[in-house]
Image (cartoon, rainbow, N blue to C red; front, top):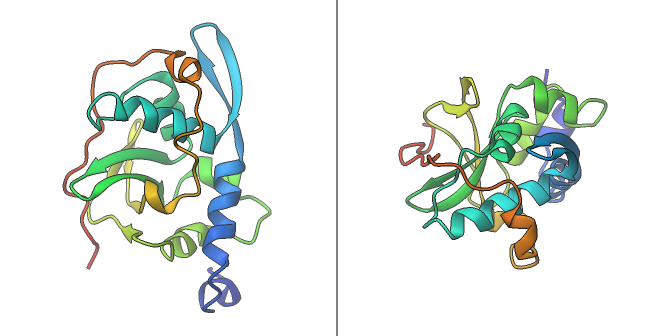
Length: 171
């Protein structure tokens, strides 16, 4: 059930509020030296900076795996890098629990962001594949130039890539 008052109306502020909730939500993840709690926005910025230094390829580090465990994946496609938010994922269900975007409403609302679209093919979220919404990193309110280089260096960069060249627009 998707509440009509959220999805059906033309409130331009709904998608930015939803993505703000997502990016300011915190998760605790594992590092070699222990556990750390950060916002999803911080994690995404760290991974985007690492990818920029690797020619746009996203790594398979513990940070990215933890992001995927929450239903989020950073991908590269011909039009640029972006965040794929799973349409149906327990990690996201927990993050949006008791909000106006719970019950999968986040998926319909996030498609309103500039350049966002439903993926044509399933995207890998750690051990499962799901369809999602691709959001260009340029449409997210992230300060990609505000990250300290020592923060990015922590945790290292593993070999591998999460390039997705054929996610396309769902018809």
